[in-house]
Image 1 (spheres, helix red, strand yellow):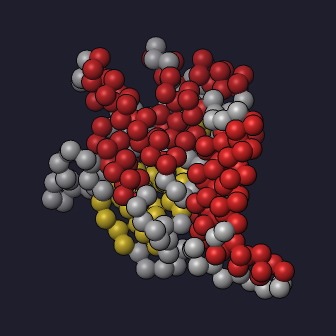
Image 2 (cartoon, rainbow, N blue to C red):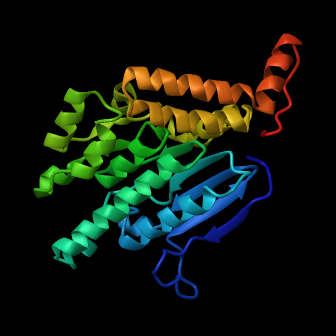
Image 3 (cartoon, helix red, strand yellow):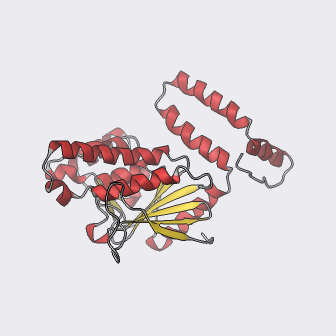
Length: 279
């Protein structure tokens, strides 16, 4: 993307800001309607500590209020995309109430992704394990380098990946999802694409270009249609077929009243490029 960029750390809610000179754990770049959030705990393989969960939730909730936002990219620094929860931090707090709150915070962060009114694209390299795999599954779309690997590996330490199972089972067919959860085995990026966990796998050198190409397609569409579509897609998935069609019809009728929709249809009839106004 080639617009002006602003970069700022997102401090975790209720947690101290990074000390002077310390690297922020989450970076945010905003350019031309696209926000890029970058996990920045490379030495910890971008594990989802309490602070990282809070920072991500705060970032997603803040971005959801921006009318100029068109898409979000979730990326990571270092060798890994995300190794899941911070197991050292978890073991340092051996308390059931603590664990309950931790997993509630994680679930709230995942739901914040789904509630964002624009698409979220995971840009994946290296490993994405346990809650990191869940994070990929929760994003609306995902593009990974061919060297990426995915696993729900909690089973290897006697911890069934229950919360990752929610996202995994909503992306991957039942039997391969169950096998991943029960064995903890890694699947490569090509297999992840075949199973539907990611959209596609590309050479590592082409990862940036592949994400930019997808963003270019999204940015060419009407913001009204994109925002309408994301909300509609997830709501109808939880409905019975009759309710889903009823809701879909109501959504399309409202969508038809948008200024962009009239412009889009007129442009199609008149064989010209549409000019979107976001209304």
